[in-house]
Length: 539
Ligand SMILES: Cc1cc2nc3c(=O)[nH]c(=O)nc-3n(C[C@H](O)[C@H](O)[C@H](O)COP(=O)(O)OP(=O)(O)OC[C@H]3O[C@@H](n4cnc5c(N)ncnc54)[C@H](O)[C@@H]3O)c2cc1C
Image (tube, rainbow, N blue to C red; front, side, top):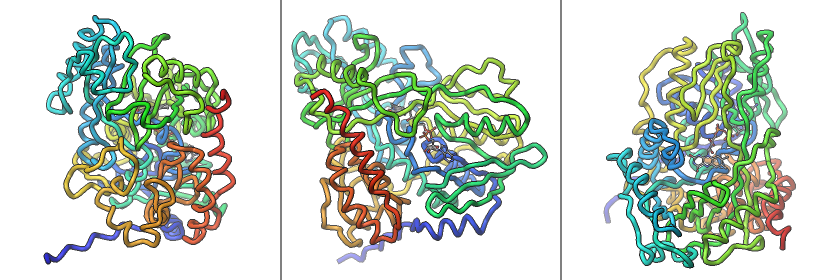
């Protein structure tokens, strides 16, 4: 038998060690506040360029918007319709990069737009051929104009009555929260220190310039002081809180930068959309876009776009948003999903950037694109917000360019993350199982065999979730609570909230065995009820 090379052990994420590291080194080139897609992207890019980096996340990585996306890695067909070519081109480039660097978590997916009027096939077909042309070599597959029979063959669950044909095009899909944790782990492998459950409470100033911060260990209550040449505020829809502190330090008042907009998703069983293709309705009755996306063995339906200025950590859906998604799904799916078919409901907040009336008043402003904004406050705090998951890497490069322009860090060449394989990159260079399929060890990529070495490898708690995966989440993936495990390492809360609630007590026991003192079971059970309860109110 051929000798096999032992797999490298994945780095441990023991809390006590991470906190001890924080206590040891109190001076960094860059301190990043916020562990969503944006902050994690900045931390990874900076660490890959050799800067010393610390990242602090108040709750868990991807607890905010970054676990609540529609799960599309996309150029943005919508922006194409708006004529924003450069934005689409950038996102298509980033789509290629992400699919290449993390094939276990981000993969191509065919989408079909069903047409109920004959002109829609050539109309949408031409637009999507332009999308292909913009993608160029980065294209994932050619757009095809489909007749009625071919459309029904690809999306057998579509409403057949009145169907004239369809258009198939290609984009990507991903597991957003697992990608976030993977970015954190990849950044750590590049030398960054990352801590979750560690809110940043105060910014520190020296000679009127931000020079560090005070953060608090949410588990022990202990405060820590960090010095940094550059502090990056990547707190998503919450960026205005730290911006207000930065302006107040200079005796100014910050103008709000973000207008949060809420998007609701409903999850139903896979048999509502068989065939492995996503469905896109480009123009709903009230002019919105509706997606039905096969994801981790279920189907995600969404989304909405409702102003939500209160920016709660756990926003709740409005009944009319649920009615809208169910109503539109009923128009386009052969079998209309009812409220009682909904397995989970989640709500995310888009960090939409307001136009700044007088940027000079807030300090040097640099609008990078319509999608994301990087800006310095009067005390030197660098804020980044807006954009989308797909472009997190390009946003990180823009942030580091801005920090170098502002002389907060040395200028080092961009591109360090272009071909940087993320943790778990599969040895074969490609995934063997689709993200659309039920979850399982395949989502761990090259690390899948390592699960086998842990206790409980063959004890299955739910479909695709073994006891070993829970232990792995604590030992190697920064998980500290039942919610961290069941919402973001496993996605069970997002797939089937009742099943996740039922599993909570057992997961809490395993966390206790793994040395976690307060697994937060009660809080998780309340959250599971929220994810589960709303859709059933109408039944
Ligand atoms: C409904 C919806 C659908 C979407 N669909 C897609 C899609 O399909 N594809 C796509 O590419 N993009 C999509 N997006 C966009 C994408 O999800 C967001 O642009 C992205 O997740 C924003 O990431 P972020 O890191 O800026 O914010 P967040 O993910 O919200 O991260 C900010 C983090 O900062 C932390 N924080 C706040 N205050 C503090 C503090 N004081 N100290 C420490 N930490 C703090 C929060 O806990 C949070 O984790 C969607 C967004 C929504 C809302």
